[in-house]
Length: 114
Image 1 (spheres, helix red, strand yellow):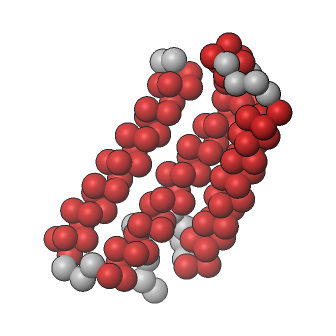
Image 2 (cartoon, rainbow, N blue to C red):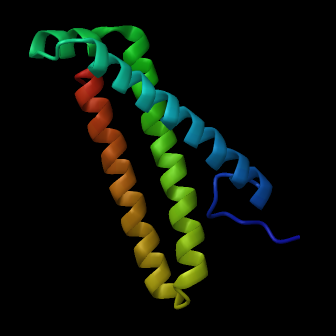
Protein backbone atom coordinates (compact mmCIF):
# COMPACT_ATOMS: atom_id res chain seq x y z
CA UNK A 1 0.00 0.00 0.00
CA UNK A 2 1.28 3.44 -0.91
CA UNK A 3 1.26 6.02 1.84
CA UNK A 4 0.96 9.69 1.10
CA UNK A 5 3.00 11.93 3.36
CA UNK A 6 1.95 15.13 1.61
CA UNK A 7 -1.69 15.23 2.65
CA UNK A 8 -3.50 15.75 5.94
CA UNK A 9 -5.68 12.72 5.43
CA UNK A 10 -4.77 9.10 5.18
CA UNK A 11 -6.55 8.60 1.89
CA UNK A 12 -8.42 10.41 -0.83
CA UNK A 13 -11.71 9.87 0.98
CA UNK A 14 -10.28 11.34 4.17
CA UNK A 15 -8.96 14.36 2.27
CA UNK A 16 -12.38 14.76 0.60
CA UNK A 17 -14.11 14.76 3.98
CA UNK A 18 -11.58 17.22 5.43
CA UNK A 19 -12.16 19.55 2.49
CA UNK A 20 -15.91 19.43 3.01
CA UNK A 21 -15.61 19.93 6.77
CA UNK A 22 -13.29 22.92 6.38
CA UNK A 23 -15.59 24.35 3.70
CA UNK A 24 -18.53 24.13 6.12
CA UNK A 25 -16.51 25.84 8.87
CA UNK A 26 -15.43 28.61 6.51
CA UNK A 27 -19.00 29.08 5.27
CA UNK A 28 -20.32 29.36 8.83
CA UNK A 29 -17.57 31.81 9.72
CA UNK A 30 -18.37 33.92 6.66
CA UNK A 31 -22.06 33.98 7.60
CA UNK A 32 -21.10 34.90 11.17
CA UNK A 33 -19.05 37.88 9.96
CA UNK A 34 -21.63 38.97 7.38
CA UNK A 35 -24.34 38.77 10.05
CA UNK A 36 -22.34 40.99 12.37
CA UNK A 37 -21.63 43.50 9.63
CA UNK A 38 -25.24 43.52 8.42
CA UNK A 39 -26.82 44.12 11.82
CA UNK A 40 -24.33 46.51 13.41
CA UNK A 41 -23.00 49.96 12.75
CA UNK A 42 -19.34 49.25 12.09
CA UNK A 43 -17.02 51.50 14.04
CA UNK A 44 -13.58 50.84 15.42
CA UNK A 45 -15.06 50.33 18.89
CA UNK A 46 -17.70 47.84 17.72
CA UNK A 47 -15.18 45.92 15.59
CA UNK A 48 -12.60 45.63 18.40
CA UNK A 49 -15.37 44.73 20.84
CA UNK A 50 -16.55 42.01 18.49
CA UNK A 51 -13.08 40.47 18.28
CA UNK A 52 -12.48 40.75 22.03
CA UNK A 53 -15.08 38.07 22.63
CA UNK A 54 -13.66 34.62 23.32
CA UNK A 55 -16.14 32.91 21.01
CA UNK A 56 -15.16 35.15 18.09
CA UNK A 57 -11.45 34.62 18.74
CA UNK A 58 -11.78 30.84 18.94
CA UNK A 59 -14.05 30.73 15.89
CA UNK A 60 -11.57 32.91 13.96
CA UNK A 61 -8.70 30.64 14.99
CA UNK A 62 -10.72 27.61 13.85
CA UNK A 63 -11.36 29.37 10.54
CA UNK A 64 -7.63 30.09 10.17
CA UNK A 65 -6.78 26.43 10.71
CA UNK A 66 -9.51 25.53 8.23
CA UNK A 67 -7.95 27.84 5.65
CA UNK A 68 -4.61 26.17 6.29
CA UNK A 69 -5.96 22.64 5.79
CA UNK A 70 -8.29 23.53 2.92
CA UNK A 71 -5.59 25.48 1.12
CA UNK A 72 -2.94 22.82 1.56
CA UNK A 73 -5.09 19.90 0.43
CA UNK A 74 -6.41 21.84 -2.56
CA UNK A 75 -2.98 23.13 -3.60
CA UNK A 76 -1.41 19.70 -3.18
CA UNK A 77 -4.07 18.09 -5.36
CA UNK A 78 -3.77 20.71 -8.10
CA UNK A 79 0.03 20.73 -8.06
CA UNK A 80 0.30 16.94 -8.06
CA UNK A 81 -2.07 16.76 -11.03
CA UNK A 82 -0.68 19.56 -13.19
CA UNK A 83 2.98 20.12 -12.26
CA UNK A 84 4.93 17.04 -13.30
CA UNK A 85 8.60 17.96 -12.70
CA UNK A 86 9.32 17.05 -9.09
CA UNK A 87 11.58 20.06 -8.49
CA UNK A 88 8.98 22.60 -9.66
CA UNK A 89 6.21 20.84 -7.75
CA UNK A 90 8.33 20.74 -4.59
CA UNK A 91 9.20 24.44 -4.88
CA UNK A 92 5.56 25.35 -5.47
CA UNK A 93 4.44 23.24 -2.51
CA UNK A 94 7.08 24.86 -0.33
CA UNK A 95 5.89 28.32 -1.40
CA UNK A 96 2.28 27.37 -0.57
CA UNK A 97 3.31 26.07 2.86
CA UNK A 98 5.26 29.26 3.62
CA UNK A 99 2.32 31.40 2.49
CA UNK A 100 -0.24 29.44 4.51
CA UNK A 101 1.90 29.39 7.65
CA UNK A 102 2.50 33.13 7.35
CA UNK A 103 -1.29 33.62 7.14
CA UNK A 104 -1.74 31.48 10.24
CA UNK A 105 1.00 33.14 12.28
CA UNK A 106 -0.12 36.63 11.26
CA UNK A 107 -3.68 35.76 12.21
CA UNK A 108 -2.63 34.42 15.60
CA UNK A 109 -0.52 37.51 16.37
CA UNK A 110 -3.29 39.88 15.29
CA UNK A 111 -6.03 37.92 17.03
CA UNK A 112 -4.38 37.13 20.34
CA UNK A 113 -1.82 39.97 20.45
CA UNK A 114 1.10 37.70 21.22
